[in-house]
Amino acid sequence: MVEEEMSLFLSEMAGVQPLKNNTTTTISEQKVSTEAQNLRRKQLQVSEQLAKLTLDPNLITAILPDAIVEFKRDGVQEAVFHRLSLGGYPIKYEIDLHMLKVSQAREALYQQILASRARGERSILVIHGKGAKAKPFPGLMKSFVASWLEQIEEVLAFHSAQRHHGGTGALYVMLTKSEQKRIETRETNHKGVKVR
Image 1 (cartoon, one colour):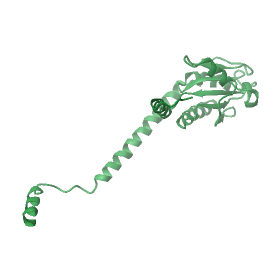
Image 2 (tube, helix red, strand yellow):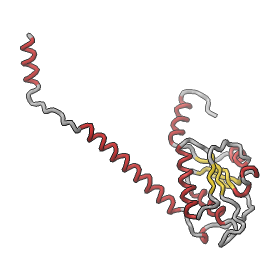
Image 3 (cartoon, one colour):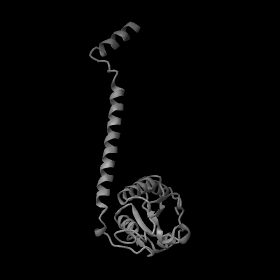
Image 4 (cartoon, one colour):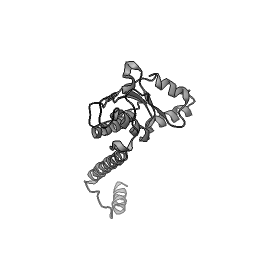
């Protein structure tokens, strides 16, 4: 009986070729290749977004150093915006741009917005300074930052900070939820748990 089963097994396996040993390596190489492609794609998207944010002072609206700055997209509730203006949301990260060159500030700001959002943070403090003696006009960095923030789609709203956070030399910036946070919120809502 055992000989019969062995004979049957060998006849069934007659045309089968063994797998090559490099199969796992190929899968790993494909994963590394895909990750590298995703990284290049993200870098290209960042470069494209940065290119849209002007460095030309003639293309932005000048904002006076002591002016209060505010902006909110459609859909941001008044109560939420009011709470933002009062510094009512926790700030885990602040970025200080006021000693940087304009091109450095633009990249640092955008990278920080992406990083904070990826960590699930909803608000950050951006310190741009007042720039009372800036050239070619006072409030140069402040004006650039306000202009850029309006164009960055990950930004929902911003408002000049309270005095203890820098006053008109800083901004509270509210960010959109990351895709991961949106998924978590959807899952929580589907489970019937009340979300704040």
